[in-house]
Amino acid sequence: MVQGKVIFTMATLALANAFSPSSQGPQTESATAARRDFLKTAVATAASAVLVSSPTIASAAVDVPEQVTSYPFPEDWGLSFKYDEDAEKVRNHMVLATTLAKGADRMEDFGKNMKKEMVDFVSYYRRFPKIAGKPSFSTLYTSINVLAGHYTSYGYKYPLPEKRRKRLYQEYAEISKSLKRGR
Image (cartoon, rainbow, N blue to C red; front, side, top):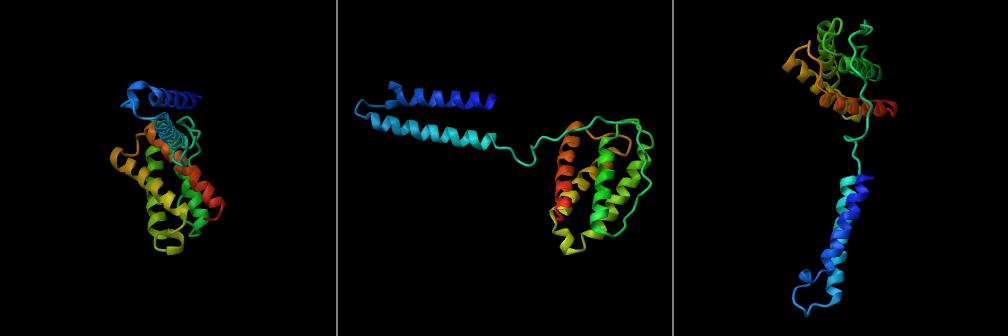
């Protein structure tokens, strides 16, 4: 709705500018030139509005769940050395890690296990070109770097900030889509 109002306002200003006496310059300039200038301005305005309003993958709307302090502590840490299973398991553990709030039960233990699993996953699977070239792997690798960087900078006891959580949930959704497609 707001974008429609912005586009309408920009088009109105372009129209007013094209036909105002001050923008026509010397009186010898014809009305055709003024219309041409208006069309150039209107096309540029419409093109910029389309580019600004088109959504990208990174800005896709994703539901960010509330943070939790109690959760079922996973017991299935480690790799099975089957890419699809391991990628889904690491992604699910990362989703849970992203959901944890300050003071969550066993948050430090979870963070240490999570970081070890992420390092093991990346160090094992990046050696295989067929896997390392998959979109699911590259997006998961990016997410792993974000979460591991948070753990390195802030430790295991501090939850992720809201902006980082939102970005990670967008990446988790992308990973899930890629894994479902076998990519």
